[in-house]
Length: 295
Image (tube, rainbow, N blue to C red):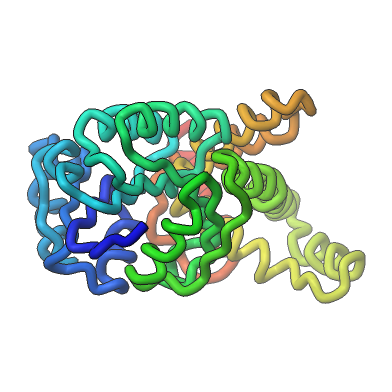
């Protein structure tokens, strides 16, 4: 499949969409749509985001998708299937639909059915690291019948760390979802641990004990980073963990621990602490103070 990549559509223009469009130099080639342009309260800010990145803003997803050769879906987990279904109504025959959202394999397979039925080619893409600071070096895992074609197209768009893991839609997302059991789970556990340790007045002792048990783990900085990510992205991580729960339940292995991670990630993310203070003690204090005020 040979694509000239004159037409790129980006559906969802949050942190990931803005980062990739700017770092990849997609200005002039890409049209973008984000549902925040539908809301009068957020419309002007989102149009500014389009202008800063140099992309052409669209009033609807259909406008962005129409005629595009490559479509990148970068929305929240709860919107991924709806966006794929909507895009299927406007997708050009033979276009590549790259679903980069953090959702369960079955969610991606449902999206693939909609896209393929409309004549497009669906590719399951898993983004395996935060987009910042990696930008175009963020590791991407691809699966699907047209994964090799998509790998070539994404490389031409500036991505530098791409690996095809199979021809089956759902394989890339399975790796991402099951990995998140551990990554997002450790975040939630470490937050629960240090918040309790601080309240009990034994934070330094607990961190020292953890370091003694796992030499080299450096639990103070690790807990600091984990809590920071939860404060900024906890709601998004909670939504992703809902998809992890679905993945585990579909596999029949149970999801008790991951269900707890959903709750803890949401609890920290919902506090609205989007600009965390520097240092673990300060982060802990801000979380506890905000929780106390909300009680």
